[in-house]
Image 1 (cartoon, rainbow, N blue to C red):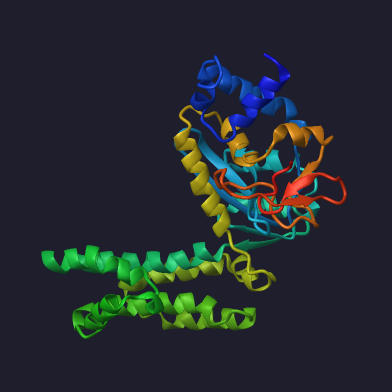
Image 2 (image 1 turned 90 degrees about the vertical axis):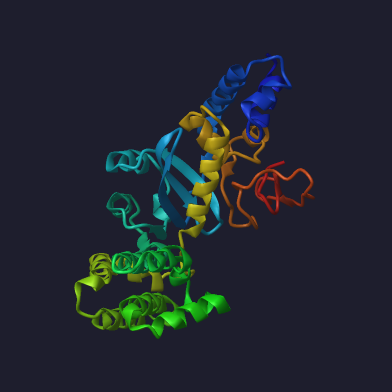
Length: 356
């Protein structure tokens, strides 16, 4: 096999399935897979990544690969790396070998303690922020628990209406309710048998308000949380909200670090990337972890030209307007604007960061 064919097969394998590439060459899909993995493995040491200042971390259980940890650059909205496993030993092994972690200033993740232990140990200049979407999700989960507890006291029609007809509306914010949903919830307020449920709904809304109503002051947000705790009524039916309060208290410092970050850090992009990674995993039956990682990190990238640039540091540069790695699929019909990196002379797609 010629070097040109070898590189072309690897390039095509970034955006096509191995079977699709095999149709263009007199090769089996297994051979195409081996070529791709060999190519990436041989050049892995020259594809270096710049450690970002805003790091996102989340875990994903992939059906075909198993548990992985996904690490993202939240500032430039791009995947930084994927790590097999999510245990403390998996994370320590990865971060202990990664250079440049002193650049990290902010890290967003859920409440998984091994994430924090690794952050505290290996990123000396970073502040951990527990992603606020994970925090406020707890209020909806508490409301759901109260709703499910009340369903047992209703007749069959009432149970079905509460379970299927109103469950979605109860999870929505008041401002986002449709006229029909708002009317349905007003009707519940007028029925004394639903007073507990609507109190739970108000507790949920007030919890969201800690973030919404105090966007610029940590002190005000913490005071609002303390006031919210005092609003929780007595009674076992409201225990799910007391459990939420305890969770916030146990992680209080890291939850309220959210108000200290200048860019209101969120791990939403990481969760979006996780969904796209899962779709790639499902599309490519039999992908190994190494193949899935390569297809996630290097898609839309011309590996030949990156390598030919004599070890160009991969990742968003200070003078580049966009990310160098994206997880969106290729769009052949899109016009490409070029950006010339003044340091290296390398041409970079201004929108996608693709090296030309």
